[in-house]
Length: 337
Image (tube, rainbow, N blue to C red; front, side):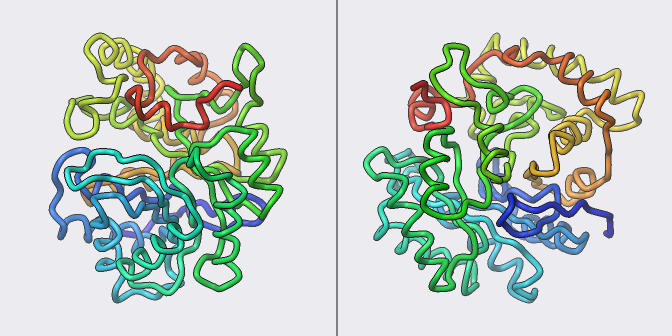
């Protein structure tokens, strides 16, 4: 499979990557079981099509995802891919969350295990999955910057943090990008809270030259998917009874536009995120090879078409929080100051 992928840079200082990127979480049971052999075929299909950006986390499947990616890339050149790795989300043996650990000593330990599982000598972007409330962000990104100097990491990234934290981190070291949820249903990064208690995240990143790696562009399957409640969706508020029906009705508003353009609703929603700016790189999961072909099929939107879609699903129209209450409490990006 070959295709023509866009090349974008992750911020002013980050690596050049293909857009969209491939998210690995779904290959390790987040939304139901998947066969490892098929998972490897998915990764191969993406790379064979010219894709370079693969995003993972050391806690995806308790290391399973990194090991799977390592297997898939074993016979490939290290220079073929840009590996984005999140760390710090602690899990118990049963998979339940155990908090965040972004201490300098801990993250260096985490990276050692990630390099082993991935079978590489460095990762391209290394980022804390969440802000550790017990560790100043300056300490965390400072430790990653040391790993950059030592050659084990190429770039420092962030994930799900608010504008004040972004500014503090950028004062310590160059930040390539912020990974954060962004879709037609979830557009909180665009504007500041109504009470004016915090800056807007997207304008802050643009001011500082920090790119956006957008995940959740299909709202975990609400957009263009079955909307079925399985895996992580069982506890996601947007899939709760009542909320799910409301949100599916919002998504249905996209059907006419998708039909006119001869694309799927999922492709339309992906194109909308891509159209948000050259500094935005969407990351999309796939669990089957045919999904890779669909996500890589080029779809472009004019500014007028993008604005029309935004009007069809107004900002804030979605019902339900992005995560359950306990997980929302871990999101520095959602805090009001």
